[in-house]
Image (cartoon, rainbow, N blue to C red; front, side, top):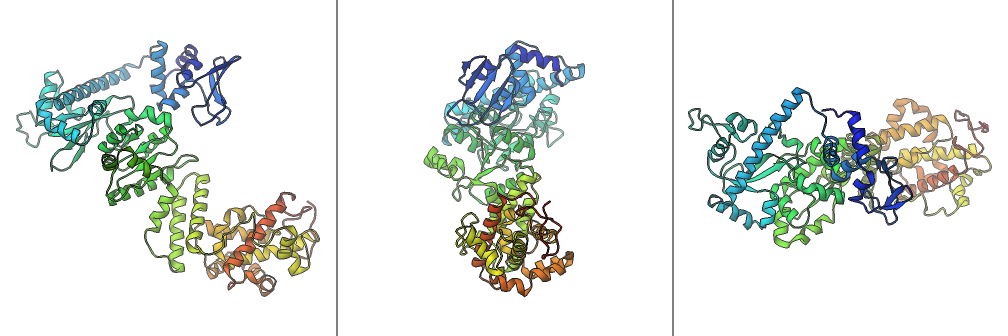
Length: 600
């Protein structure tokens, strides 16, 4: 139901922002406003301002901003409608009345909620009755305290037909029980139960709540060898397992306070961890994480922590979750992963070693890009150029799955760095800020300008940079791993002439597209794309005589050092040059190296 603007205005007018915020933040009045420590990021000096007069809060540290409704949404992980309903009750306002159709639907859903609540109470009572002794012994044998059993409202479903008869006696109908997912058609149409049977029997019961704590479905676990071990309610008007997280109602407050949430595989993992002090833990409902569940998690924390079992199935679940998340990533929104010891799950770790046994692996979470890297590495050999190219292509294909372009670019760069470290572990790493040999501007000019041509950047900037840029391109074509390693900084350059610059852009396009990066393949690709004549100049003997380290057979470590020197020089020069790239300005379409640069 859409909430009228007039109602929202009245709600904001009745509630003091400082009063609502003050329940979570210690505020000090400063003139007309209140100041406190921001609840959305860590700080030691207050930068969080609340203005009742203006009706909003604002943090000058992290930029958080909003009104009383958005504050409740963010701090309590509520949806808009839920926050409005909560605040309306505090303000003594009655929510706008729905249309007759909406009221009828709400009443119908309210009836289903009442039936499910009655079922929960009945299951809880059965657990504490003589019929539930074995179930209670099972739960206490798993280390659960009475307070934990009560907090998660655990119960027991006895034999066939008991729940149905109890709820029919309370006034429910078979149609309502079926719609609530509590009964299902009997295997036999001639069944004494009128053609339906209990959906749960002879199982420990785990009530499943929505974010507001209302029971909307159940999970059941057998105590014997029956299969399947776990079952969930079928989808109903209230229950859609792909859109829910077990334990969310219990974990929401702790997760909102810590801005952190842990995701585990099963009900018992979540309950045991919660009892051990990790109150911010939830679990999916027996399915791989869905987009809707990821959206719920990202409302609780920027980087939810996924912790699956330390077995083959847990590893598969980790990879499925990582790949499901890739297209959905946004700046600041990602996942982290916990690797458990082989054969262990969170429940077994807690049972064996207490909370500390889980804290240790939790301290070593892995980022999402590392998980994707391990997936594509996959224990395969990468001892040939073709196998290395295949690995690079798989990784860049994964990066392209990220819809957000900024995040995609950073994934591509991260994979380039990992590839370079894998394929060239013993080589000297590039450090363009502090190149190995070139310690000052004169040394750099000697290495790239004055030594080969008798020219310096200051004496004849166009001619010197033109030669340097040809050397650069020869270096990248003959040592393509350097192109991968330094693509980001190379992309910031503008070369001395437009044709040379277009050649560099085409090299970068090949690199970021994950294409093969062997020298012969690069040269062939460039020739086919209109650069054949220019390649003759760039890869000619005259360039190799001036810069032997750019030749195909040159030591890659020396080539890397020279590239570092070049980047250092060009980025230093960029601080005193106009955007066009050369001292004094130049014509970017200049083609004849004998011509002088012109001031634009």
